[in-house]
Length: 384
Image (cartoon, rainbow, N blue to C red; front, side):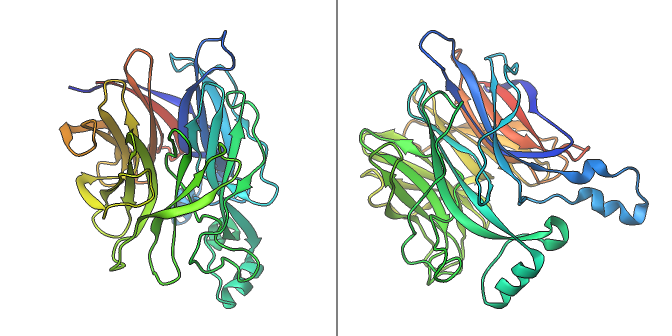
């Protein structure tokens, strides 16, 4: 029987939209106790400038967006009691573009790999001109003031437990895709949100994008044999040949030996979690299957007792965060769904990431929205 011991706000500031977190246990050196490194995307939220407004203009108070020209990856450290031991500090900025979701892979106590993607902002008139040329841009100009070009997936590397990071290293072009801007910017991996894994000899990094012949996204795999210094396209993880299901935000789990499992968001149909398995470390994948679980995206965690803990956002009423246990092979659900939170004020929440604490409890971090509308980062400790 699982129970939620406590919920703790880890970061909240009326000036910022905080979202898309990941977390890991790290050590700065062999002589210091472990602490928690939290990475998350922080962007401007200018609604704090508004005082009381009339009823007719009240809708403005609700306007926030998932793209911002100055969004950055931000780090904080916490002790194991979830008390902050550092301020919120932005990683060195991307000189070209705005950084988005943070996905962290622990290679050792000090060595970490960050994967993310970024948006290239252009002013409204240029965005309109690019659209007239047939280019696809994101963003609502009336809210964000810009149009956004998908700039691609990158990785960064830390050798000191997350204090300092290497420069942005973008993935090579994804095969069989149309250029983002013809002749000027190919699809450099597309987008990513989800856990990479390290096997004995290589790192497997999942991404998602749309192929030339397709109308919806599919999931793909890149690999590195030099700890993320260079990357190579590897395989298709999951694609719907009928083009009914958009498959996004894949997250990987190394089950055992050569078996790797992908947990995928299904954005077009029932919002049920999709899984795919590879028995040869990602070289080929079986056809994806739909789980009887609603939610997205998923973070899978292999527990010390062998079971798998998956957590996911629930963007349906009642809005919140949920989880489930699976057996060690990922082939069977165990017990009932775990309701971590069901008090969200809207569907703009979720993107959880979990880590097992030394005492066996699981810490789940995610972004959340309550009645005040401030998007913030919360941690929930779950006793299994």
